[in-house]
Image (cartoon, rainbow over all chains, first blue to last red; front, side):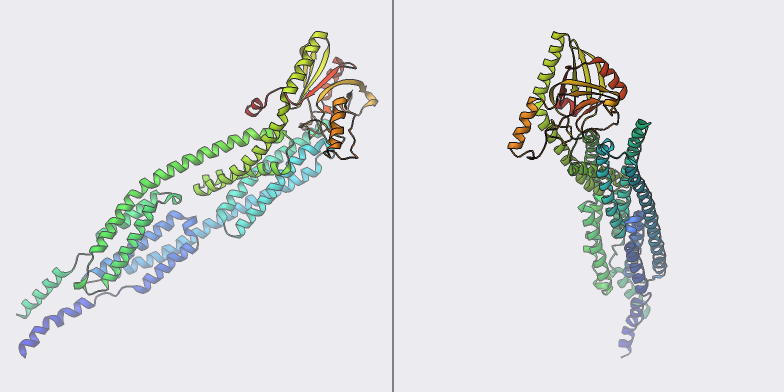
Length: 199
Length: 358
């Protein structure tokens, strides 16, 4: 009997050592995963691509480190827990940066759009000022067509902004503004030519 | 004895722990990360996607193995997956670069080509009386081309390609319609050339003066004794492609005419004017044919009072069918010609291929 108890003793001593020592920081893992997802929802992958990639990689590195710890005999997740907390903080920052960048681009698009609308209003006014009758008609017909195309383009750009497709909206409004400016120059030239002719 | 048993058990346990795949996983992870940094997001090759998938699978299996009692863990498959993932990730930048370079080159070529097409035909589109739809297609195409450049400058290569393809469709459609219009018009080129040559030869033979109007060149020239003595910029009716068919069609007639009246002062509101004998017999035949064939309304009039007059220089074709010159040019022309001076009006004296390539 005495011998049996003594034989069991090593197992009784060692077994607890194998089964305890450090719990996986599941709550922190979940929080970090959600934080990275939130950054993606904030379109960080679109607006701050490099930062988002680095964030994803940070989380991957910590997850690998956790599995490395789990593979060990004596586990400690203290470092990994701290890193997960840092990932959550970083994810918040990346999401904020993405929103800021997006707002900057949106403001840029809206500024250009406002300037475009002003040029278009000016173009419409120049059309009214342009010589009536056959003398101006032919030149202005073609310009009117171009203005119609720009007006249609403005509607498309506004739709893109409304659907949060900021980058493509910005591309479109810049291209439209360039065209509207060119027409403004053309219209001004036409009117000046006719006005000079009348003097 | 107890101590020996403990030490023995401890050693047995230590030797039984399988080696974790941490090193292979870390290598795969960092290789994937490095590849992603160096590959444009529009050109991620399938190999990198596969590398990420293998990595995720390896991590998932590792997690599962770690839930097992340590003596029963087996990381062999995870090591294989991680190594394969790393291998694929390492080759990805090379594959991406091949695709990217081809794509970028093709995109650059297309942007340049469309830019040239747009510039080349801007001149034609602005000069010709094309229909509104064709004009709008061209405007849309040029705006899309500018948008494609904007997208490219932001690194959106695939988006730029999508827009370029739209721009190409619109630009090529409008150019195609414009060229169709011109090709149909220029079927009369041999007749114009012959008519002009004969008139100039006649001017030489008879040692007389004639007026030659080239609509495509927007020029009005004076020949005396077969030699060019003066040339002026000219403006016509907005519907100047083609000859005049009826009153109100805003077309400038084409054919052989003569000056029937010289007007100045109170007799004209256009500074000075040379009335020509439109409609000539050919015009009348064409008009009557048009009525018979239903191409011209039965109540249409053939028109008249076509002149070469002043008040031109507006930079556009604006008359009801007359030929307009600057007042100073009109003064000179007026002094060079007299009643019965021949007036030859043709579509073009330059062949179409030269016009398109100028």
